[in-house]
Image 1 (cartoon, rainbow, N blue to C red):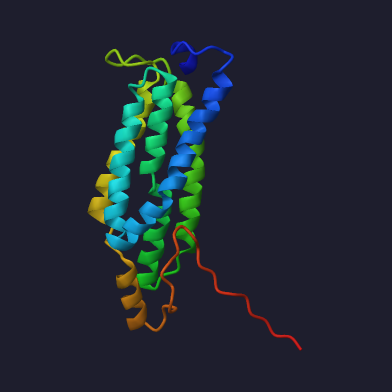
Image 2: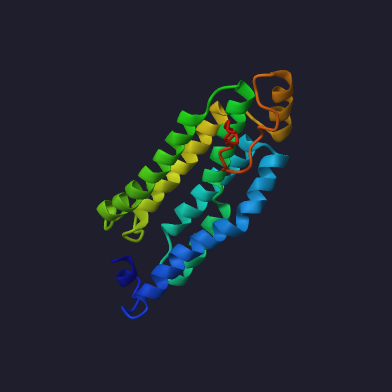
Length: 200
């Protein structure tokens, strides 16, 4: 319906659907190294707050897009700005490593929340599509709600998340013998100890 409202011909609808989803994913892929570098340089809290604010702004920008090329471009920039999942996982791992606390449940909740959001987001968009707001396009409200949630999350991160860096995690690991050395994380990966066994 959004594409019909933009005057997109049925012939090119599949092309634009693929372009929109690909643009977001390609943007995320290209920016992965940048956000990893930010986490090492500035720390996870600062980087996560920045990516939430930037993503919230560009998601809000999608609310005003009135053509598919513009929407595709906005989705690409949104992908570039979106390091949320990677940085969230890294921040959790560093925080739990510094505290010497098992992080299994925390990572399970991250995965569950991400899966739930992939269902809730499109569902909300379908339910709220067509609600007119201040002369904006009929798809504006779901994007604005998503933008507001991302910006609200940036406030929570600022207020509640303690800053962690590679150096601080390594220093804490050195002070606490119960924390395995070298436990500072790779981005978004759950470190696992190699399996050992006895055999003859």
